[in-house]
Amino acid sequence: MSIGNGDSAGRTFVFRADTEADTAGFAARLAALAEPGAVLALDGDLGAGKTRFAQAFAGGLGVPGVVNSPTFTIIKEYEGGRLPFYHMDVYRLGPDEADELGLEEYFEGDGVSLVEWASLIEPLLPEERLHIRLTTTGPTSRTVECRPLGGRYEAWCIQLGITEIAKEETAE
Ligand SMILES: Nc1ncnc2c1ncn2[C@@H]1O[C@H](COP(=O)(O)OP(=O)(O)OP(=O)(O)O)[C@@H](O)[C@H]1O
Ligand SMILES: [Mg+2]
Image 1: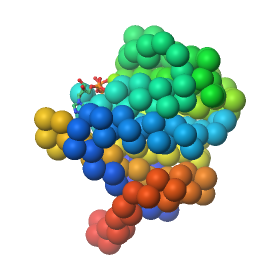
Image 2 (image 1 turned 135 degrees about the horizontal axis):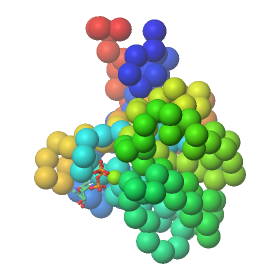
Image 3 (image 1 turned 120 degrees about the vertical axis):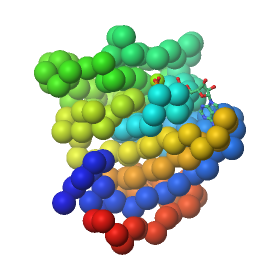
């Protein structure tokens, strides 16, 4: 059964960031691997660093200019980088509104989609995606937990050389 973040078949990889620069560096390395139609599903508490991650990811794609939080606009599109970048924040979205946004057009598009608070729209996410959960572990430290759904994302995690953690054998 798939519970929560759709992790039934998933492997889990973890990167530990001691500083904001570590998070940014990791996001930029991920951006270097990104391909058209890639979907990153970000979760994590308020202030965990989802938007900071998105900014560094955009920087890694070579998106020019400032990438801000799309909390009130829901979706912002950025051109001018190696690939188009679609930055979404669905925190304030009701389920009906989410349906009407036509998110699948973005997910299937030529760009890379990054969704903050993605678990809120889990049923609308494509089957294959990279889940990323940021957890605050100290004033500047975060864990970045990556759960790839689909071979392409699994390959990214392996290429990044991050630590795979053993599957929990309890409470499945
Ligand atoms: N290791 C780190 N990684 C990311 N951000 C960090 C780190 N250390 C400190 N920070 C700070 O944490 C804050 C993260 O804020 P950010 O807006 O990215 O969070 P968020 O997850 O998008 O929150 P929200 O849910 O409100 O949108 C920033 O002020 C950033 O400077
Ligand atoms: Mg944010």
